[in-house]
Image 1 (cartoon, rainbow, N blue to C red):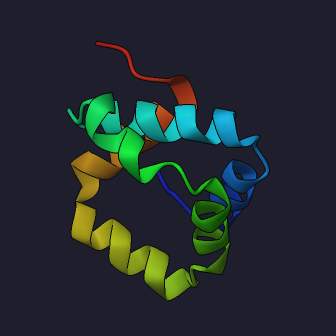
Image 2 (image 1 turned 90 degrees about the horizontal axis):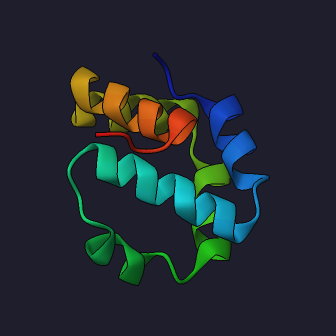
Image 3 (image 1 turned 120 degrees about the vertical axis):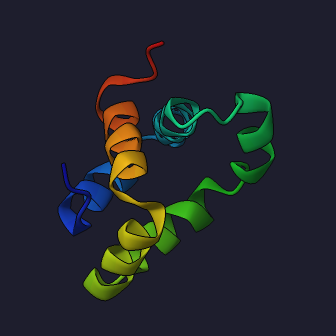
Length: 84
């Protein structure tokens, strides 16, 4: 599983509410409660701008820092929503 610039462009093309739900699903798949993520999701325009500005090197560094297992969980949450 891979997260790349194409995936990020697809995410930023979603409505603010759809992207907020995707982010919450990805966080939930890693065990982070929605109540902890919601305060950070008020500036969706800023989040989209940041996602669009990430270089390939920054994406690679971020994925490396997260670790393969967490990246799989996040990608699954983004693709399918959170399922326990």
